[in-house]
Length: 323
Image 1 (cartoon, helix red, strand yellow):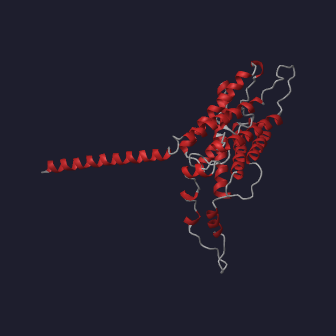
Image 2 (cartoon, rainbow, N blue to C red):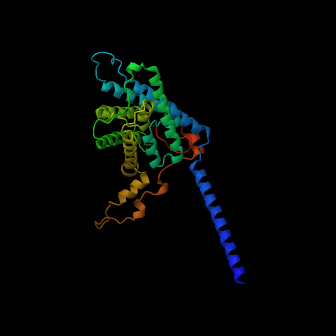
Image 3 (spheres, one colour):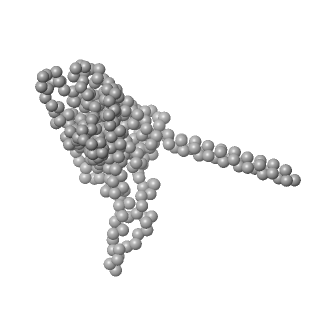
């Protein structure tokens, strides 16, 4: 009797384990399917290829401005910081204008990371974007290396930290913060006061960052821009600074803009109630749940609706902004 009972109990436990594993496997499959929803579509891969091409052209044109064609002279002039800054800024503005409706025109892993933390782009799609951006930057730097005479290549625009590394990290964080904050402010669909060109404003943000930071760190503001020439020249000195600084700066700017300075209108109204007084002169009591940012408070657009309505939205289903 005891043997039969123990055998039955063991069978039940085996069935329970089997059911548990099946359930977990089903959940994992569902999670993977949700994460990769919209990736295996023609429109998404068109967007990914757009990021590759936009970053390639941007890096090729921008790094070309760093080549010193008077390097063969006895006393070559110093690099023209204004020329370099304008070339970077105008190049990014042009690429944003050209590819904004195709891919969102990120052209920068820091911008892509900012879109992920504000739930405008899924992590799975962001990985493809970043890979495309990095490959585009490497290709652009490689083309520049091939077409430039060996005697004039110099460092090929590799960014170098000219101050203590910690300060360099801070500089990269700050200038990328300025760029990404500009991106979110000029591409905010909730604003009705916007006028002019968002692409040009973003280009100016890049120009300002370069005018300030070139003497300090080379003014990367873009991990892919630093990765391209670093791989071509095999120069990775303090390269991590140009990933950590810009990505932290981009995430900080996106979080502050989206959740603090310009949150969703409904959330903004709930926050205002926190500081209103009732007729007796006391501040109103507001439930904590009413002023927290809930998972569903960030607006996203369904794939089918987005493809039909607005070409400046992500073809894979999320809002991407114009850069």
